[in-house]
Amino acid sequence: MATKNTSYRVHVQDTTESVVSSVNIENGAMMRTDDALYMGHNNENVIVYPQGGASSLGWARYDDTEYHSEYKLTLEQDSEVVLPNNAGNVVKSHSSIEFYDSLTQKILGVNENDTYIITIAFKAQAANANQTYLEYNLEGSGQISRLAGTIAFPKGNDEIHSENIMAQYYTDSTFVNDGVQLKFVSTGNDCRIWDVIYFIQRTQNASLS
Image (cartoon, rainbow, N blue to C red; front, side, top):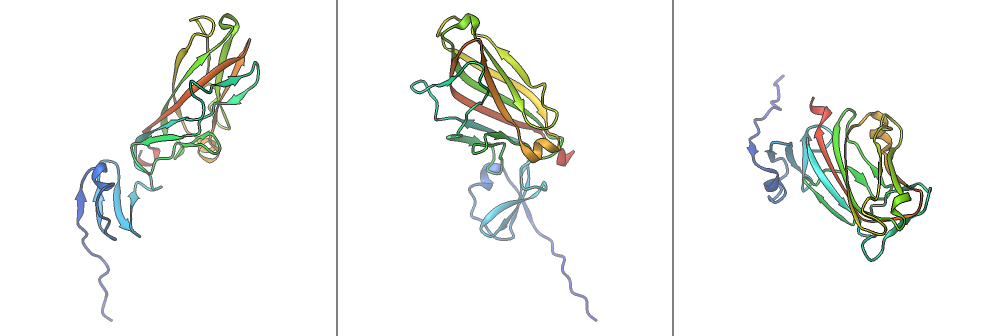
């Protein structure tokens, strides 16, 4: 019985991420960048490596557009709230990246044992600055309880503070399955926040380790 040859040599084009997003898609055509291996399939360039359909590293910025200088969010004293971010404006290093879900207001992980750096930027003010503190923490299942802190208002009553929180963390299985939320509590008195931005960068892809 004659054998059938099902193995073919495929030419893979080396290119850049910017070119991948702009080329005419050909089914079966393959392109390789520093981040991923792509193949044209059903009129879309899909990532075939690394597994999981996401490029190896990257970043995403999520801007809240609901609360701003003309419409600030009031955090009532001792009431815990999820820091709001409707992701009204999003900028990503790659279209495959999903590090935040605005519907659930959860920060997401891709793989177990990935590592990330998150920066949370926002503006805040308190009418009674000497007695008001802003407590924050990541809340969810898994080993994330130590990502927490306290923010004071040293500039004085109703002065605008530009805050910037930066933290590094890794994702365990429960983080990947359930996601986490960033929660704030205003202690001592009320305060107001606005112009919230999440900037999340994946610094290690555990699937490639």
